[in-house]
Image 1 (spheres, helix red, strand yellow):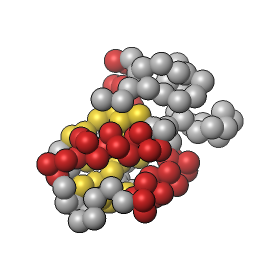
Image 2: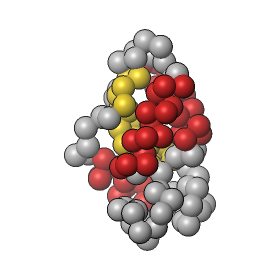
Image 3: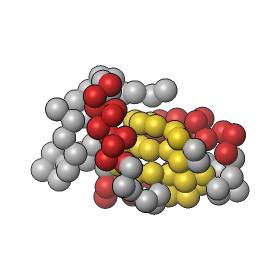
Length: 108
């Protein structure tokens, strides 16, 4: 699993950081859907846009459910995010906002 953060924190996610992100993600609704076409450039672009706006997002898998972990890892790698969790038909991605003043999630 890709546990690397790109940004001021650097390094892998610690256990407490991962738990905090999972807790924050519980109340989120999925903002990106992965359909029959799988991990297309459009899905990657949608993930990038959502990560810029929210930092922490959920992806919902409507198809390719047997490949959800690999697709989640691919989306994380292509967007510079961290795959926090894959549970059921949902993946959680986190990418810190590049502007520290706009960052809403603190992992310190």
